[in-house]
Length: 84
Image 1: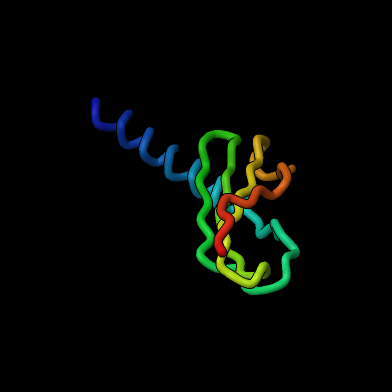
Image 2: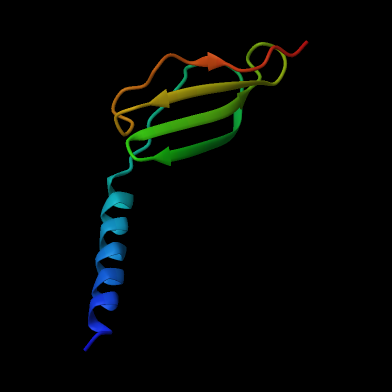
Protein backbone atom coordinates (compact mmCIF):
# COMPACT_ATOMS: atom_id res chain seq x y z
CA UNK A 1 0.00 0.00 0.00
CA UNK A 2 2.83 2.42 0.77
CA UNK A 3 4.37 1.85 -2.68
CA UNK A 4 1.42 3.40 -4.50
CA UNK A 5 2.18 6.98 -3.45
CA UNK A 6 5.79 7.06 -4.71
CA UNK A 7 4.71 5.38 -7.94
CA UNK A 8 1.91 7.91 -8.43
CA UNK A 9 4.36 10.74 -7.75
CA UNK A 10 6.74 9.40 -10.40
CA UNK A 11 3.94 9.04 -12.94
CA UNK A 12 2.71 12.55 -12.14
CA UNK A 13 6.22 14.00 -12.54
CA UNK A 14 6.69 12.17 -15.84
CA UNK A 15 3.37 13.44 -17.16
CA UNK A 16 4.24 16.98 -16.08
CA UNK A 17 7.63 16.88 -17.77
CA UNK A 18 6.08 15.57 -20.98
CA UNK A 19 3.56 18.41 -20.93
CA UNK A 20 6.37 20.96 -20.48
CA UNK A 21 8.38 19.38 -23.28
CA UNK A 22 5.42 19.60 -25.62
CA UNK A 23 5.10 23.34 -24.87
CA UNK A 24 8.58 24.20 -26.23
CA UNK A 25 8.77 25.89 -29.61
CA UNK A 26 11.62 27.12 -31.77
CA UNK A 27 12.37 30.85 -31.44
CA UNK A 28 14.94 32.72 -33.52
CA UNK A 29 17.05 34.83 -31.15
CA UNK A 30 19.26 36.66 -33.65
CA UNK A 31 19.30 37.78 -37.27
CA UNK A 32 23.09 38.12 -37.52
CA UNK A 33 24.65 37.16 -40.83
CA UNK A 34 27.28 34.46 -40.77
CA UNK A 35 27.08 31.06 -39.18
CA UNK A 36 25.76 30.49 -35.65
CA UNK A 37 26.87 27.27 -33.96
CA UNK A 38 27.46 25.77 -30.54
CA UNK A 39 24.20 26.88 -28.98
CA UNK A 40 23.34 26.01 -25.39
CA UNK A 41 20.20 26.69 -23.34
CA UNK A 42 19.78 26.64 -19.55
CA UNK A 43 16.41 26.79 -17.79
CA UNK A 44 15.64 27.52 -14.15
CA UNK A 45 12.00 28.20 -13.37
CA UNK A 46 10.86 30.92 -15.77
CA UNK A 47 14.45 32.05 -16.51
CA UNK A 48 15.83 30.85 -19.85
CA UNK A 49 19.40 31.66 -20.90
CA UNK A 50 20.88 31.01 -24.34
CA UNK A 51 24.53 31.20 -25.44
CA UNK A 52 25.85 30.66 -28.97
CA UNK A 53 28.82 31.30 -31.25
CA UNK A 54 28.56 33.47 -34.37
CA UNK A 55 31.18 34.45 -36.95
CA UNK A 56 29.39 37.43 -38.52
CA UNK A 57 32.04 39.86 -37.22
CA UNK A 58 34.83 38.06 -39.09
CA UNK A 59 35.82 35.78 -36.22
CA UNK A 60 34.10 33.56 -33.70
CA UNK A 61 32.35 35.50 -30.92
CA UNK A 62 30.09 34.35 -28.07
CA UNK A 63 26.64 35.89 -27.60
CA UNK A 64 24.09 35.67 -24.76
CA UNK A 65 20.39 36.30 -24.45
CA UNK A 66 18.02 35.87 -21.46
CA UNK A 67 14.28 35.57 -20.89
CA UNK A 68 12.69 35.94 -17.47
CA UNK A 69 9.19 34.81 -18.53
CA UNK A 70 9.74 31.36 -19.96
CA UNK A 71 10.90 32.51 -23.40
CA UNK A 72 7.96 34.76 -24.27
CA UNK A 73 10.10 37.91 -24.31
CA UNK A 74 13.90 38.18 -24.60
CA UNK A 75 16.36 40.80 -23.38
CA UNK A 76 18.82 42.40 -25.81
CA UNK A 77 21.62 40.29 -27.27
CA UNK A 78 24.87 40.68 -25.34
CA UNK A 79 28.25 40.03 -26.92
CA UNK A 80 30.41 38.19 -24.38
CA UNK A 81 33.77 38.19 -26.22
CA UNK A 82 35.87 40.59 -28.27
CA UNK A 83 38.24 38.36 -30.25
CA UNK A 84 40.76 39.83 -32.65
